[in-house]
Image (cartoon, rainbow over all chains, first blue to last red; front, top):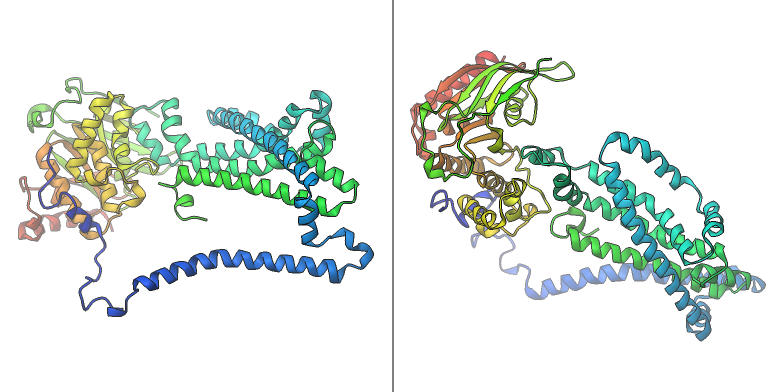
Amino acid sequence: MTALTADVAGPTTLDADLPPGPVDGPEAGDPGPVGPSGAHLVLRRVGAVGLKVLGPFLVACGFVAIWYGVTYLALPDHQRFLLPPPHEVVTDGFLDAQTRSELISGLWSTTRVATLGLLLAFTLGSFFAIFLAQARWIERSFYPYAVILQTIPVLALTPLVGLWFGFNFRSRVLICLILALFPIITNTLFGLRSTAKAHHELFTLHDSGRWTRLVRLQLPSALPAIFTGLRISAGLSVIGAIVADFFFRQGEKGIGRLLDVYRSQLASDKLIAAVICSAALGVAVFLVITALSNRVLRSWHDSATHRS
Amino acid sequence: MASPTSTALADRAPADRAPADRAPAADDGPVLRFEQVAKVFPDGTEAVAACDLAVHPGELVSIVGPSGCGKSTLLRIAAGLDVATSGTVEVDRSNIGYVFQDANLLPWRTVRRNVELFLQLRDVPKAERSERVERALATVGLTEFADHHPAALSGGMRMRASLARSLTLDPPVFLFDEPFGSVDEITRERLNEELLALFGKLRFGGLFVTHSVYEAVFLATHVAVMSARPGCIVDVIDVPFGYPRSADLRHEPEFARITGQVSKALRSVHR
């Protein structure tokens, strides 16, 4: 089949859709010959990147400066151990061979626990959300308990889980799972429920069943919400791994145990180094999820096309 | 509440015949018929009251009326998206081309995959799918943009993609729900001309809901005038122009006379 009519087919149709605007003739462009030259553009781009890097860098400098100020000016000599200066955190925490290897193996242990917990939470949470989305009465029957699960303090749950299942890897993962499950469930459910009505009608026109709707419509349209849940849960999963580790005081030494040990030794420099490590882990997980989300949603969703 | 009975026209041929076979035939019986169709919403609003209307093969009937007069509701009832409170709708629901207000494309799919959607939902085999998709894309002139996502397209191109999506199933009856209401005037005229060319070639039976009298007259074989809520077809005006129609038809005195007649009919039922 050929195009509708010769004059409207092909690239000319593009022009027809553009809003009518001023024609760029030689006299129409007001910047004239002094338009943005190549060198200008390069400078502007360097400027933009510079601003992006320079701002955060200056804030970091300011933060370190305040830190030094508190350590040397605000604290009297006998209390200086409470907040050792940044360079001591680096030398005693990150450059000291023994502490460094403790931190690295602790990070590795915590990362494994948190990652497995998150993966489990994602799998179970998504399936549970899909199950809840099948009917209002199912949602009404189960959802309150999902909320309650969320309100139980981890601190209360941690010793119980340890007692029941042992103070081992499995229990740590379980605590991560419990902590990370709820945001996945709510966000996925929200995503599945908020599919546009008009989009549903496309499927209604063709008598599509539940399965087709779920796979071809609801899940893809829920992806942005699913990633939101995943991002929140990733952070919670790291916290879960650290909290479990902190309270178990047994088994493999993760970052949580190190925090506890350094605290009891009053080794503030190592303690701060461990805190920085756990924060870095949280940031790393967040960045991984954000990168994944941008990759998947890049082509169509606003959240990924206009970077936030 | 009486439930509506929708009887599929038994003698309708399967969907996948070639468009060339579909010559306009007046004695074929209507492809779409409303008989005393009424719709009362659950909140008590009377949207449509006792509508009678028939669309025969090769007829493109425009329904004009102001916003909120129930013309979209009538269309939705025909498509099965809404259920009539009483009355009968006769239409073969197994293959209706429904063109939504605001293109209604799935943003995560490329244009090509959007156009493919209905074929997928109808379980058309893959090899045949791609052939029909490419043909529909070529028909609306979107082949070059097939791999773009809807967000990257202009409003007019999105409407073309939406049209192509319906074309893939080659339906004998098309329902248009104010499809060009949200594009600018120039694009709208262009899309009207394209649709006209398409109709001239395929001669499907069509129902075209719009609030623009000019659009209604320019496209249709008949213009149905709808009264205010509860909506009711109060007049059907024949449009005496044949097909193909030239874009300049809009500037002819006879065109002005018909639009004047439609406007007058509209004004007499809307204060």
